Length: 331
Figure 1 (cartoon, one colour):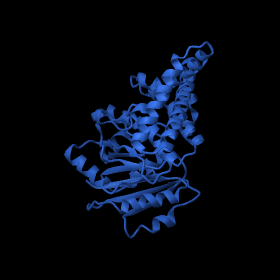
Figure 2 (cartoon, one colour):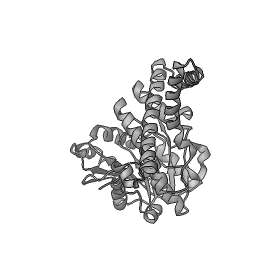
Figure 3 (cartoon, one colour):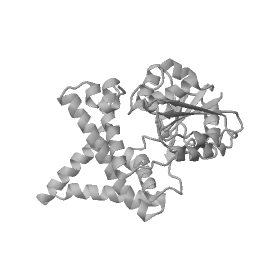
Figure 4 (cartoon, helix red, strand yellow):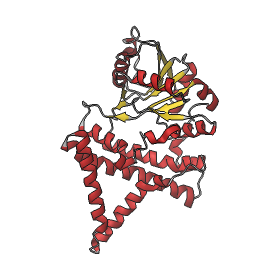
């Protein structure tokens, strides 16, 4: 089993430098290659990549912009390995990452795997807060990193792997800008191919987002989910509604205050306190705990409003999936 690490890049030479250095630092003796694909970048990473060519087996490619999923396919089609590891450029690998993946696949092989994300101690308070809201059981139910998922773990493209055989069998990622990793997961399952979660194969995910960018990102995640449910019938879950119900419930609670009905707002207050305490226990800083409450609210508002918009367009306006969320699809 030979790994090919496939990394799409778009205008991020500084990030790719940090990721490549973490790959150089891997405690892994088996030969592997790194495939970097510029997805129509205007700020190229070639000079950065050149600095690592003596230390790593690197294939550096460039193409017109067509989105992350199609760019990953482009890289996998040209990779020489038989198992592809897909990473986002804003990740940093712990030193034992490749060892953990290799060991897990040798013990229990699956045609695809996913790993979790974590916050590095040197990350900013905002980065740590966003990481908390995206990974905490209190905010996502632990969906992004759950050992209970077994062979039904839904892959996330910032940190995942897929065998060459599975790539050829499924055709890889669809040509869409959002939800392409979830779509690939469903295609794998339809072809009777298993996925697994490897807890030790986590990455430090920097997420250098402003609050506005984070809201937009989660909005797009929420908007994509009903479209994916439509594309893949019988995959919808009641839990997908939770962020939207959070918004609706909060608005009802605010209205209830006008009539001296305080139970609803008391529930939300307790919930926010739990988030604060949990984040404080995990991150050890009051500033991060406070921002974790804020990032959780932003996440719920973004995902929930995006989800409701797509539901309205799909169910009420009876639009096609392409017209429900046009930005999701590559033209």
